[in-house]
Image: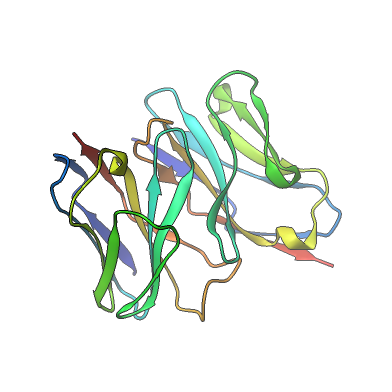
Length: 113
Length: 117
């Protein structure tokens, strides 16, 4: 069965601290992986995506994610969190052909001053 | 518990034909409702959102329209489909709030794969 699991429903980190949001997937074909953020006034915004090649991908706003096939994971990281990063983050798996996209349940990030 | 239903799961339509995709939410009242589209090679694009019955905001100009005839029903329509309308359409809901907040959790339907030929 195809699924995406984000084990952490809510995470709180201090401003300036590092961040890692976990994402595990189950997908029958070659996975194409995405991280989205629910940004104010913009709906879902694509942070980064992985299709192939280098397993460490860089995204916008200083985020990066690493694809680990052996662990079926695609964790999102940021070295130093800013207060403006507080948001809801979604991991998703699908393909880049405009096909079905499966979302995780989302992780709410709170940032302490 | 809240559930969201979206149908059909797949649809193949000829160019120029009409479209109607339906989304309903159960177990909550006055939800914010959204239609997204995933086109090939691109991320999700917000098409429409609604904060109440008859209240529809369009994010991008296009060949589509949306309606909310009932509190928990959101319909995506087109009078004449174009080839470029092909893609994966996703309905979502979130708990009522005034406008959209940064950290509102979205709950997604299972999506509709639309192929326009």
